[in-house]
Image (tube, rainbow, N blue to C red):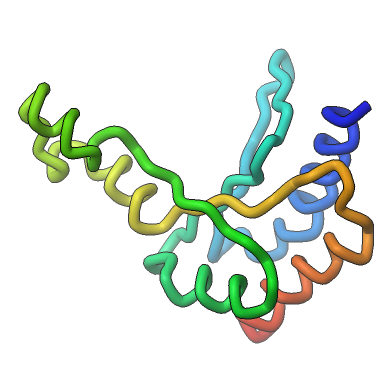
Length: 123
């Protein structure tokens, strides 16, 4: 039941945040796959995440970092990784973050998240 509620929350967020598709990339789930949505991933299309993340945090919406392995010092050392060789991973590192998708979030909580994005993007 917890996973089902998280999936419902994610579907609601996807449906409502899709109006910002020109600004954010939202998760897409293949028809033959499932997702438990422990966290809800968002990647900004045209900007770095700092302003958005700071805005969300200041409004009481917690965020978490996405951390592709290419920026981890141990992997850079072990595998001689040059971040410039992985532009998509670098983009995700600079522009991607997670917000919560907890099963106890209410419709009011989800609407607050959606309205906070709306206010940030001034729509």
